[in-house]
View 1 (tube, rainbow, N blue to C red):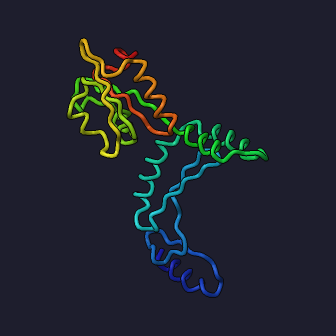
View 2 (view 1 turned 90 degrees about the horizontal axis):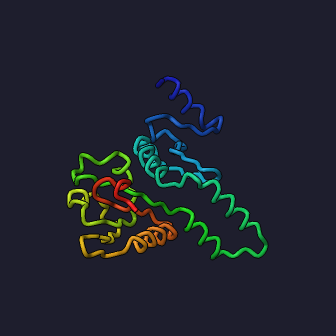
Length: 193
């Protein structure tokens, strides 16, 4: 309501209050953030009033990469931090180790249109992709440019990495706090080990 807005703007200098007018950033003294919480951790995204919708989209992307069990990690870190002989390097290591994630991604026949929405969403998050030979170039093109790609191809008579080595890599990268994807041609759970 423009009349109410004008009245509030006129009263501001005398009554000294902060004002937020939706979709009129130049009249705002503050902006609301798109907020996500996991226990004591809060992440706020603001566009300075330019595009609250974009802030919400970015918040939603951040929310996807936050571990669901972040609350238990926070409690462990809080308890460690309260110890008189706390080790800051140990705390950092615990924090970094607590946020890794591993996705087993079925790449099907190689046609992008057959990927699930969960698979497509996982691609956006990847820091490291362990890719087998049956994953098509079309699907490989979805891997972010910033993602490290590790070839773990297995062909008749030749395995670039054993299954134990692949499993160890998944764990190693996740312990570093990275988001790792194991991309398998076909149905990963049917042919997975």
